[in-house]
Length: 58
Image 1: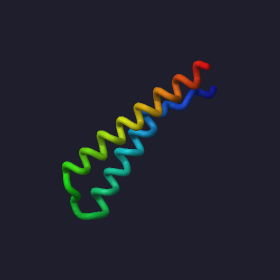
Image 2: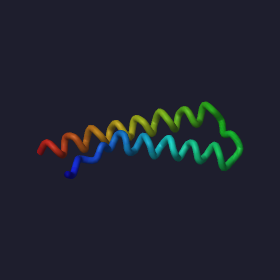
Image 3: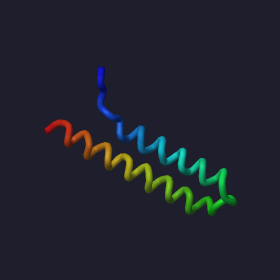
């Protein structure tokens, strides 16, 4: 049985994995900058999820 892709969960998971890898592989970055990237990334993931849901209903 196939199910629809949950874009919000997928993109948020990739964002957190990317941030984790960034912290593990390089020196600690500026916390404020990483917080801004996190908030912007979550906002983008939410935007994509809304667009995907609207496209499915058509």
